Image 1: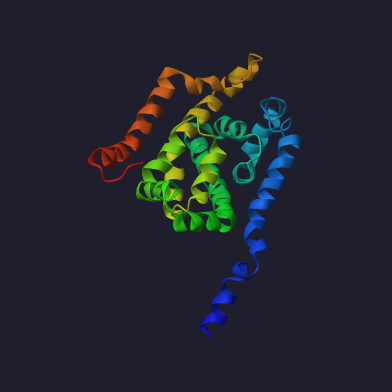
Image 2: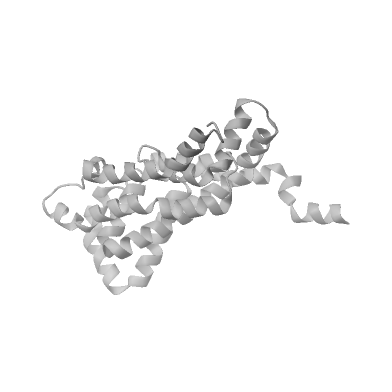
Length: 248
């Protein structure tokens, strides 16, 4: 009876293809989107449609919010081009406070979706193999498990780490779901503030015939605090290493 119940509750175990289907779908859509959407999810498109977007926001605010979050969620969940454009658009349409809020919510939901898809299939089997392995691979896995919060915050705070890598890598090494969600939501806030801030002044940039300067992220006054937060996130790992509790 127990065996039959377990099989009934976990059909993906009987049909392994089902476990990999969500991630396979994401990879397929991401590949198609990389070639077909790059010219549409751009600042030029935003510039050409800004008056219509602002007018629709003023008359249908709730619908605009729902549509924006849904589009941003889809971009992140399927690793489509245009995440930076979406983040800046949030500031352009909704201002610094609400723009940051909607950006963080949409990006966190999208990241969680791709994390779950990867963990359900490839991540589940890969994590099991790492647990069963010996030597260096096992030590790396154990080190990550001991420092999940710190490592996940580092992945979010270091600008050089691509967002999709920070979504997939944790799933492939079997981190806890709650830790991923927490560090994603909190860890992307600093970067979201920067992109939203750029978007707030986007109207003036368009009026001058220019394009938003995303290189602002690498200015000392911006990158400095982000690196300081990264160092703070890495501090517990360094302390453990110095004390000899865990060599990572």
